[in-house]
Image (cartoon, rainbow, N blue to C red; front, side, top):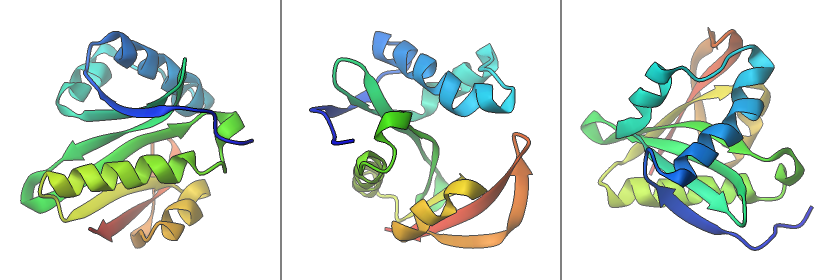
Length: 146
């Protein structure tokens, strides 16, 4: 499917867009593995940066966590099923990496669900260590120097 018109925005925790972002992620990332967001999960996201691709609705997004020593973490990358393989995920990742660099970060780490490792490898991420279980499914730690 071709990408519809959209814009990328960094949203504020607790905003209307943030609530929509939580609702967007729930059926894509949480429900399929038998999880839902707890109040503690959402509270922990207050200090994290939230990027979404939005037209009338949210089409995708991710979370960037600036960290110590110039290392940031990307998590909760999600794109609506209809737009997977459309390039939207690459666009979101490129914007997050650009923003991370502007914050002085020089490396990004992420925990990739094993089924999407190839996506991150195409973006220049390299596996590190062994496959491990996180939220009941296999993951791979991956890194990229910015």
